[in-house]
Amino acid sequence: MILDHGLHILYNLEERTQDCFKQAAARLREGCRSLLVSNHDKMAYALELTLCEVATAKIAIPTVCAQFTELDKHERPSDYNNIVQQCITLLAAVPQTWTSYSGYYRDAEAMCLAVRYPIERERLEQLHQNVTRYQIKQLSMLQQQQKYMAAWRHEEGTRLTQLRTLQDRLWQHMQRSFEDANQQQSEHLEALSTAIVKLKEESEAALLTNQHQWELYTQAGQQHWNSLWDFAYETLTKGIDQLDTRLREVLNASDKLLMQQYEAEAGWETVKDAQTRVVHDWDQTWTHVNTSLITMLQITAQEIQQLQLQVHDVREQIFTLVQSVQRASRRLMSIMSKLNIRMIE
Image 1: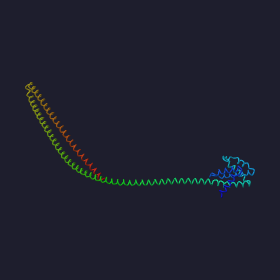
Image 2 (image 1 turned 45 degrees about the vertical axis):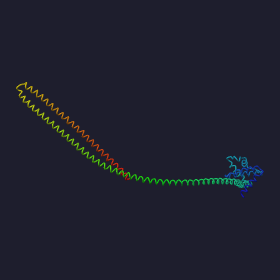
Image 3 (image 1 turned 60 degrees about the horizontal axis):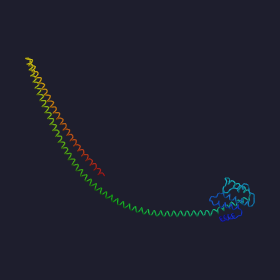
Image 4 (image 1 turned 120 degrees about the vertical axis):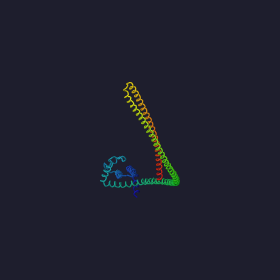
């Protein structure tokens, strides 16, 4: 009912012979297409129609309202709303013009509603079409996604089956590997135990052999040392005996020299000759004694040096033997440590 009333009024205005009504109706139709029609716009439309009616009735228009009719309705100045408000205030002072303005204000509301209804309906239909197309697009995407999910699920199921098969194969392989490793470990442990027992027996035999060799080396060294000591003692004893003999000879010669000195009183020449012979014998005796002592000392030094060399050789042999025993002990300890680690694992 309201829409029909608004359209009827709008059609009547557009069919009026006066251009003022046609122009006002055209601006109202164009302005009401917008969804945001303000109250000031409706007041301006009602005021414009009222002034058209007043001009048709050839009634005097106030100055402010005449100024409104001269304004550009498309490019409104900054004081446009103030001019509209002042003109409406002046029209309200006259009952006839106020009645016309009030009627056109109600008609402007109905005409805007009638103009905007098909536009809103068209926009709603367009929005419905857009929503429908969007829903169809989303439905197609959902169907595509569903197909993709089904294919993905099938692919994942296939992969899961393959993974289970691979897991079963891996588990069987691990079991076989574990059994083989246990068997190899048992064989290695048995071989290692046998090697350790054998090494222990060899080490004990080596220790006994080395101990026996050490005793032999010790006895040989002691015997050699005793023989060297006896030889040195015998040599020194002989040298001392020879020295004592020489000294006794010297003493006897001295006694003879004294006797000759006593007898030399008989003649100086005889004593002089005897003294010369005694001195010569004395020199020869001391020379022989010195030569014997030097020879004896050289022989003793050589024997002692040889004894030191032999003792050094014995020490090196003993040191080599001890190193062999130590290496065998370290090897045995290393094998025992590895065996303990294997047993712990």
